[in-house]
Length: 322
Ligand code: CO
Ligand code: CO
Image (cartoon, rainbow, N blue to C red):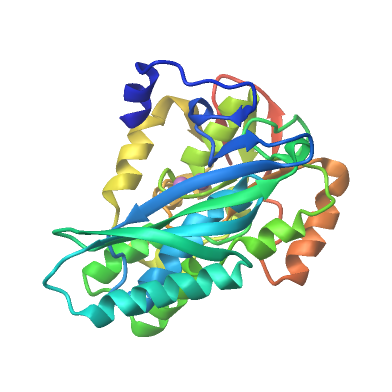
């Protein structure tokens, strides 16, 4: 919606603007000199878990993720807070503590922020990172023959819906919270020195939504194998009970003519393939010659390390799942 509105605005261009908002990429990139560019992103949302500390952790991991997804490293962050007068102050303190600890874990520093009174609690961060201008990773660089990896299992959206309906046990709640609070830092570091051609993080548009953006941006088709895609077990269980997020249904119908689900295995997990993720993993395209190295590097960091598919010549659809 905002994207369409922005298209009608006066063109804001600059010779050093390397990645703007036109390419549905994760963050903007602006060149400072031939060695350095800044990566900038902002994200905030209402609570997705009850515990304010963990909400802060997740909001920060999510905001930091777009820096990693561009191949950058985070440097500084600003807190953005909307706070209802009805809530006790300790909630605010715990939320900010969660966010601050996550930013510190990322090796970055909080340098300020802004808060307003708001009807509904909201929290997020604006993050600035740094990247070498020649090593920016967008969603537009995938090449035929590349291998694809996904660094976190999917299913956080459907589990959040299950939690609201009291269908999820505490152990599974803790597990999904820990995953959403996990930085994409290790996944990004696994790519260091390898021939990674394209990268994005899987968030609100679901695996197939973001895969589709990568395919369209790169002028290729992505071929995924359903059995190789990492899924949270609790998400599979909830899907089998018919739990579905509104977001997954919307994305599925929006992309209906761009996605082919060619096997019964693919069709049986379709709702999960479109499930909107909070603080999801990185979707990585890497040249075939470095695929085994990336797999080993991910495994060494205890991240999902099986290739989930490959990049093929552009066909009539953006993504095929078999
Ligand atoms: Co992103
Ligand atoms: Co974002």
